[in-house]
Length: 350
Image (tube, rainbow, N blue to C red; front, side):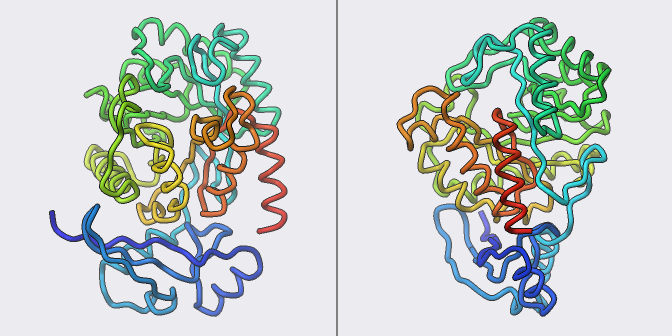
């Protein structure tokens, strides 16, 4: 494996300070958003064997090295709207699990009518996107039969379409994707980054819809048995880069790709924390970023909170850590609390 160069924006600033630094050529903006960066960590090598250094943005901005110029352009270029939804501010994706066994709310909204009512509530609380899932992918979960998954999610999508909601379908199966698109879904969200089902890549390409590519090590049944990495950040980054390239080769424009580092999917506590500290690196993929850390086990481990539904404060802290690094979308269960936190954060920092 040949050496590779990575750029991680650091020296993060926001508000008027960021705008003044940008106007003087001393900082750049993460994906054209409200968060600026005055420094960059330069990482060279391969996962597990790298050298690192730091340089001011102003020095690298005038670099004549093509790789650096390409990475800086990817980091700073504004992201295209997703399903006509502007990404100039952080967007909230509300979780609607139509399942009996999801880790945080399994069985609470398992029927179509309950799920539709819950989705409407999340939208009223400030969810910009509603993510409908009919198969739990929690650690240790078993696959769900295709017909059963369709019976769970399709009535909900159809019911929400009538109300004009922006709908994402959370599935690993090409047949479910195809039926969901026909039923009115506006976005595809695949925890396997379109690798679980050989037909998913083509369905996503022909749908014309935005697609979320998430990193996971292993499948849900075994992913938490013993996850290992030489360098979790660079390995997740490289994987997502490879999946983005595969999507582009299949005809999916980069402008409709969203990357998700997959917090909790084949990662230990330290892996999750390391990824959360390094989210700014993923802007150099040149796509919008989604963070899904809501109610996950690492929050319970850190706070000694066993019940996932009691992890809203920790979930908001994780979401704001992502927003402070320029993440464009956060996938959450506690929409009202997250919206309130984002409004206050934006008032202070934008």
